Image (cartoon, rainbow, N blue to C red; front, side, top):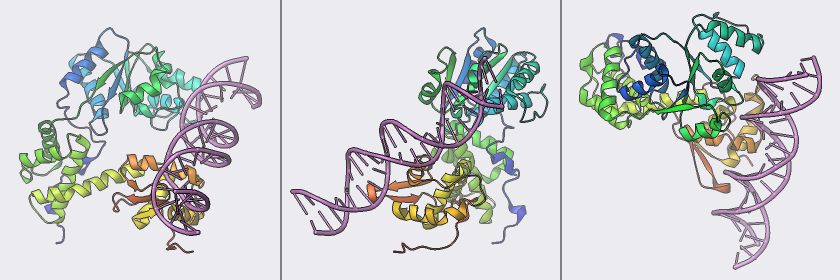
Length: 364
DNA sequence: ATTCCACAGGAAAAGATGGTCA
DNA sequence: TGACCATCTTTTCCTGTGGAAT
């Protein structure tokens, strides 16, 4: 069962990365033309893109704006920044750095007013600023600031319209955003998208059939990111099993592997406290609240030894669980003192956290 | 049935972080 | 630079709940 590299089905693993963007935009004609009329029309409003996780919002923003640029013979610049966890100045700094006119690097000590100045000098015409994960913008007035620069049109990306309204419309009430929702793909559409991916990532297209691709698309309910991970996982399982073609069983067997990979990425994107708590639950598969807190207190000194973070109190720990649930990493059942915390997938390992192995069966 | 207990989660105060402005 | 403000996180305090003990 030794795995011969020549048997590998995957030719280019990068094709299955989240960040891979050397693709053609498919089935987004309507949204594209809406965006085009916003960006090329007279309106000086901004754009809000929404859609559920994994439908390809960032990719759409990137590819469609570049496409509009080349088809319409317009020439505005596109600058894209992920806003997650960044301050106003950090976002502006990154905007300048990402702009083709700007310096590649601005020292972090530069004052905000100077960064602002650098930004305005870099702009030499219409510029579309894409704010990725704009729903994560918290204590910043970045939107208001950018709105005041006439050359800039903002394309903000968020998950959910209501959430966006709640967080921002009140604060930026007078700044207009045209809303363009991105829907999930139909089975057929996603099947086709996956076929393109396979064509790019696999050595040979004959290893998987059209029906199989559509089955994957159907199973993931039109969520592109999941479909792509399922495709990768199916190929990975097939290669492990020494198959030359991907079988239906490989696809089925790949499902947990794909989900594990997605959950693993989510866990790693979370702050340290979440990961510590996850590690404790994962250690035993399931644990009661009492045992969880006891174990936390036991390992706290070790686990927080050489990290910037400090251990947190019980109430604060409880406040971390909703996020872990939302990311489908843990579940809870029972209520009040009987609550059991349980990992969804024991194969998802907290890579940064090493718990000291003092197996403490509820020592009384 | 009643009381007791432990804890999840709500409310609000306190703290931390980062921005603005004189 | 320091006083002040806005926002988000953590802590403190507390209430409601459901199971166990009486």
